[in-house]
Image 1 (cartoon, rainbow, N blue to C red):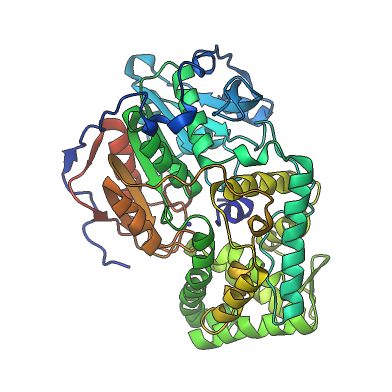
Image 2 (image 1 turned 60 degrees about the horizontal axis):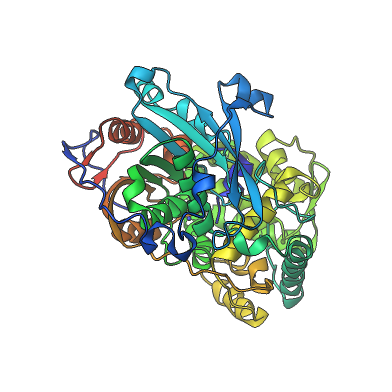
Length: 520
């Protein structure tokens, strides 16, 4: 996973057992509900007002992105209502992509996908998945991607934002926190100035309705789903709203749906502290190579001291001035993946040397992360960030009083000195002009699903994932004892891939929850 994607997906231990999956049991059929029930979309799905959207023609053509077309991906645009409660009102376009089955005689349906975020573009997701999936799945499915409403090529929401994320560490004092508040207020104001008619309609429930329009347009009675990170929120919401339309459902790296989005973000503080400690335990025996400290405590102390030094004198690297407001985010981007331990250690060494005034060579991993943080104004990242806010803030109201966030920041400092203030600072949703038009969907259903969760996930923590598992009562859980987010695509594990591929091919869930030993 790229560093930009890792940032976009920020929002979401047990002992290893056998390296192969236990015998599989047949998945229970999805419960049937009448198509006109409130589960199928609520009051917005009234009468036949959506028929013209469900039965519109689809024209697969070359994608605007030549690299997508070269990968075998074809693209199309569909029309959906901006407000499903007013299907005869304003419309928007959503961009979808497809890599068709390699063998129509073996094709069993469609597999819709979402890469996470929200705010991560999805047209390239089919190609990313098929690089990993076995050849049988390439024959079994047309794999479908989507830029969700307001994102990328789907009537994009560009607010003219000057940064690519709300994540701005308040630093050590009230003045830094007040600056975080000012920046979030500015982002909210810019979006409402630009798109007041659109923002209320970017909710996950509306995206799920778009997913169902895609299913219908493609002529399928049911759809399979692969979603990671935020894509698990979307997939579980779809399963709750349209249970009779779900075929096979894979959820990779899920948050607690009852805590999304605000508490999911806040939980990242402690999770990243634990990841830093895990990294420190890895780095200490390698002090001869990286010089970060001979004990885990010394490695951590060096990181905390670097942040204090950056508050007093910005660290100059690669043409950027890194202060204590940017440094925690820079660390967060890489600490969440144990496959990146060497790159993260090298990055820390460069930062420490730069703080000492030594000449440094900036490694690509650091240069890319710095660009994500500092060079987003006027770039696609800023527009994608606006789309992310559109979903978060349409999904759930957040406390409006800055003092709430100040108390949370101060409370976090003792146990989360590096990342707590960063993850507890206010999102722009705190200053949104309207409350959500619909409440978040409560997830509680028996729809069969396969869920993959890493024990060291810093974005969607393992404990949070267990609560999604309990809410999806028909699910089986695949636990992976690694520090990673989005396991199937981003953290190679043969056991995980065999289990996911077998389920998507045969429809049989494991007989019980399983643990995949990493790399087996």
